[in-house]
Length: 222
Image 1: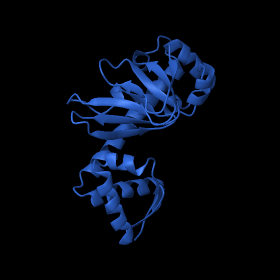
Image 2: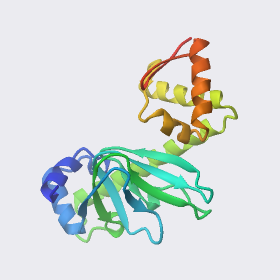
Image 3: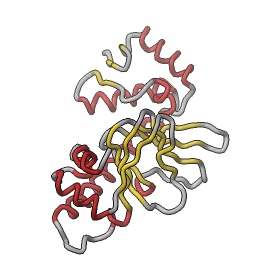
Image 4: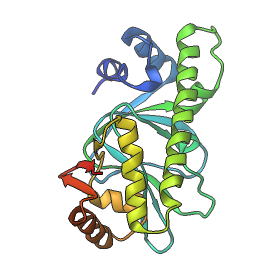
């Protein structure tokens, strides 16, 4: 994917919201942004060393994963088309665990130098000011997502974690049902529990009439 096609795709990103394709193309040239392709399972970015770039998913899906010293994997965030990632936007990594963005499907990613995001434009142009404002909005959104994650994980039992996660997403959809953005395997990683134990709990919840599940469609009953 060339930079012209990337600029067109980036119009759908929250980072470039309100900025036209021509201006995005100019900003990519000005910043020295680069477009890269990644295969399924390939590491897109490892958060080690300095925060030297910000990535935007143009197409495909990725996950921000933490792997501890025992090899236990935890999904911290699901990244889809238009989503933004970077070390300054990631969860803290005080324990030295591996923290990677991994492609869950074939991905095209734009990498923008971090100093372009944080520095003041020499021309004080409107598009750069809007770009920075959008970034601040993204940071606020990630803070809300982290708060939701903490709320889910603060529950002790698998059932309570699931019910909390389902309730949050139903509230977002303003309905009694929603579509999960990821697989049940990833859901188990997200709520930090064994997948088999989680599936048993889901089965019991369905038998008790608490939830109805059809593939990724979840409906809370009662």
